[in-house]
Length: 130
Length: 288
Image 1 (tube, rainbow over the protein chains, first blue to last red):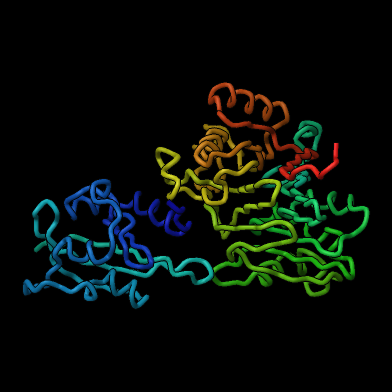
Image 2 (cartoon, rainbow over the protein chains, first blue to last red):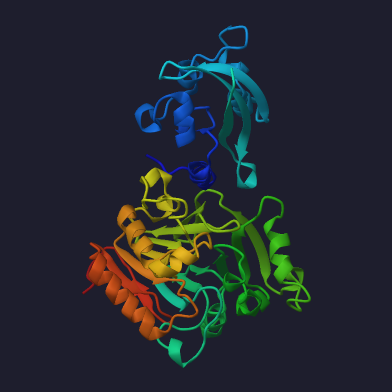
């Protein structure tokens, strides 16, 4: 498998040291990594889920709004950050792979590297009292 | 492909009786092709001796800067080809997120740090920003990638029909990786170094020194060995020696590391004046 860009490698290394849940995707929105704190919220270790395309992770955790309506992928902050290449913020309920429903607040931003290279996106999220 | 080390010291020049064998000049390596193509890796203090050694100034020289820290740049203004009318000098180096390469170079090549402005150099000067994919320079294909070091820094992979040289002089791939090395796809510099014949790699520290200097952008000998093994290189050439390390210390550290770590690849010292040659070209018919 090809080596990741250095900015993506460093983003993973930084997120590995953060207590904040973090989720990293490639330019197509495909999941490339989430950190230990994110594993607690998402209910499964990254080593078990592995990389996956956007269409899969955007529905895997069954994101819903406050009214319980299933959210479309393009409504999710990280998908907006990658597709529109702009920061996005929002909240939603997700269903972790451990079966738990959690309210999370998400801040996502596109990962723009040296020379303006678009490399993907990063989401940082917080679990909120439901 | 002929390679000569003109300076392998890191951080600051360290001349003196205790550094005679490894040398005190900072980073500079020349790579010469069979067709006469001359690449110069970095412009530390060693580049002045390279310039002085040229019997005649070639019509074209390419200077490949890994980054713009002073130990890799300080010799540039003293490199003879830059002051030679008619010589075509191409300088390759990284821009930053906010400044182009010309502006960054001009911060050094302008008063009060240097009396001659970049635009006043007598050569025909062309600047190229890296990384920018693979480029062909004479008989060489040069690939550059950003690597883990403070401020934009690239590693270079130089390929020809003779073989591959990987140059990762200031590099800390173990930063933030508790069980280094991680998987190849998540390791800084891997794409530059994989299956290289020679890997010139940062070996500035021993294990204890590294612990106190994490994040400074350099590697320990142990980390360099692990990186070289991951990348399956044929020979690791130690580089970017700490200015405080004497010849005897460097020799002992390398001996101990080879004894303890038992590398499956060759490990040799990158000392000033060392020449390496590689040729995979078939001998011409009738040649003996």
